[in-house]
Amino acid sequence: MAHIVVLGAGLGGSIMAYELRTSLRSEDTITVITKDPLYHFVPSNPWIAVGWRAREDITLDLAPTMAKKGIAFRPVAAERLHPAENRVELVDGTSVNYDYLVIATGPELAFDEIPGLGPHGGFTQSVCHVDHALAAKEAFDKLLANPGPVIIGAVQGASCFGPAYEFLFILETALRRAKIRDKVPMTYITSEPYIGHLGLDGVGDTKGLLESEMRAKHIKWHISSRVKKVEDGRMTIEEVGDDGAVKAEKELPFAFSMMLPAFRGVKPVRDIEGLSNPRGFTIVDQHQQNPKFKNIFAVGVCVAIPPMGPTPVPCGVPKTGFMIESMVTAVAQNIGNLVRGKEPDQVGTWNAVCLADFGDSGIAFVAQPQIPPRNVNWSSSGKWVHLAKVGFEKYFLRKIKKGTSEPFYERLAMQAMGINKLKAVKKG
Image 1 (tube, rainbow, N blue to C red):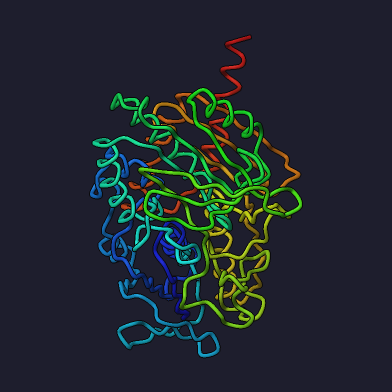
Image 2: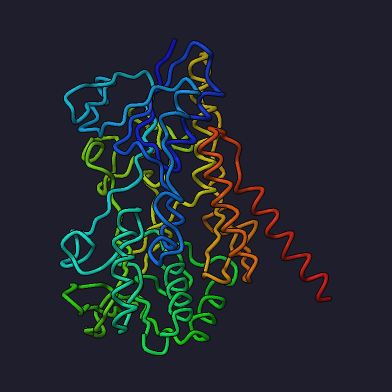
């Protein structure tokens, strides 16, 4: 009998536990450790921030589902991982031992790396967590009452650009519906070397599609920009040239700002030699297995992935839902192999599929593999993307509630590209 511990219960950790249940032997046991007993659907946070969703619309209590699946559930935050002892120390003073560990913690949000950044004592909002999104909703309500300039974007070192673009356009749609868009100048600030880079060197024509949308909606932008500091109602940025030198420093006023921070690994697994890189992300090989501690695997945003290549301002690589699903499936099968005396042999596909909702339209892209050169390099836009995102939200919340582990993104990708081809045929 083997005991497998999953550390974290977000998008990756929850489905990791469910998929392990189907891949392990009946006598093997699973324990999920999480600091938050409630699952919240992170992709819906931009809707929360403009009042299109409420907290209860996107949160689920994980304990009943875990219990039905025979999975032990510990809603207590981890204090420290002790890999040499096969033990996770919890903040309540207890410990959980394991035979195999899957790290699925997600990231720590590095607001503290820029003075004045973030909702905790800073001056910018976030949509990385449902609590942040609810705080952003309060700031949005103030903007409706007293319109003024808006700054949206992603700071240096950020690796998740999709939600920044999503919120930019969702906010623009919400302002138009409130009939105050004409009173709100909008600016997008990003560390990307060009609009639509996304940390992936673009996918299909994301550059052209996103630039076109921003021009059509009168949104200005600053690329290769580093946020120096944020003060109340004012952001100082540095525009960086291709040679890495600062070209200009600018102070931009704002009445509302949402800036995505850089990520780093969470404290319980940081600074462990052989396990984590300098940013605290977990090092894995092609089997999602740590090279030093062979009984430790990792999935999701906490995984260490090198950047695409040098950029004037640092840009991280995103870990999309499809990529995470492929990691989860590989790990479940590899641990299933190990408990049966076999070697790991499964490799995640690491493809990227994304639906970026704009409130009344959107952009979708498929990158297979995520890192170029690619076999599939496709992007498209239209109202169908918004409808697909709504459908995806309902589907995924139902999936988490039922405790199923069926993959979704690959089917979505094929259907999305099929829709695009069908449109082309009809137009022809």
